[in-house]
Image (tube, rainbow, N blue to C red):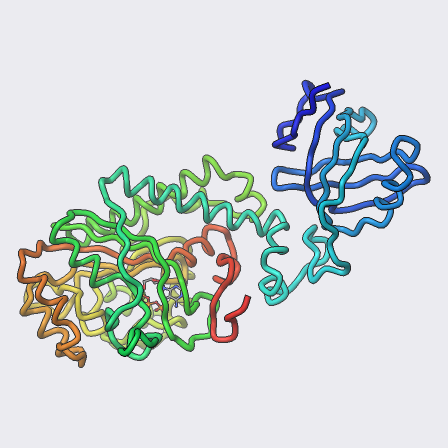
Length: 431
Ligand code: ATP
Ligand code: MG
């Protein structure tokens, strides 16, 4: 008889009953009743009940299986049978090889019967991924990357890869990780900002998905020291067209997740159907007025703090944009309206979480120089960047969208660390 290798436990149907199959996976549970052993096998495709009858297998195998620890990995061979009484499919075992035993006790219980704290989960990250709910977060992440790339490709963007070791940071300042680059200092990239702007010289539309590093000592549920950002830049587009593209991107992603990832979203209790309405667009000035009317004293020109965003989130529970920020609280490369101190900029928020900052960039080299100086940055560090603006730089705009924060929101998680495989924060450099 030909053995079938069971690829997908979710796809067992009547046509498999009575067939001899091979299957491998982890032992999630075991119990014995007299001369019968019941094992639950799980692999990445689902679960299957294994039955071992003492009188059908060699004594040595029986003795091994009796002492099998949970989460040991096995390869088995047996016959699939439908158990009418319990309405389940079972594998009656003929052979079983223990490929590797797991230690006991394990640092966490992947079946989810015993809950673990986030630190325990992160310390045993690969084991935690056997828990279907946790694994779902990373399946969503995987699919999201695919849909995001698909969206950009459909919109004629090209994917670029810019360097992550730099001689200076995009915005300078204290949040750069310094490193030794042979006999010179080097810095880890905080964003691809300057490079993606330079590429506007040749490509009309670019995007990049990559890791960035910020030496911020912020200990919050939405900051990490290494994060993934989705960046795009396109030429000859205004602020509102750039927000439109951002909104279309997020909705394209959500629609695809709803269509193709209902299993993962269900496990995570994430209902994305609420987030498909048009995203509100409110100006910075409206936000200041709103906050003042809610007895939260703010002056025009103040930055909007975490506390303010929590207050605003009573009114804005889903995605929304805050537009037209005062120029002095936006980076030097952001453009202002004609004769105005108001910038052509936006932040995309989800409730009280900032997901993205973007806007129209300055393409005039003299304006850019004076803004760099006004920001207190050293113009010498920007020479190679500034010269590219003399080579026919078109007007352009774009954004940076925090991918880990986006996944945290879409997967209905409270802490960014849950959406990242091996998060890096002040206390965590290992694993
Ligand atoms: P925040 O005010 O929340 O610290 P930011 O305004 O400094 O963010 P930007 O420079 O605007 O961040 O970066 C664009 C996006 O990148 C942010 O909206 C956010 O989604 C993401 N991002 C920035 N810093 C971090 C970080 N430390 N950890 C995770 N994501 C980040
Ligand atoms: Mg920002």
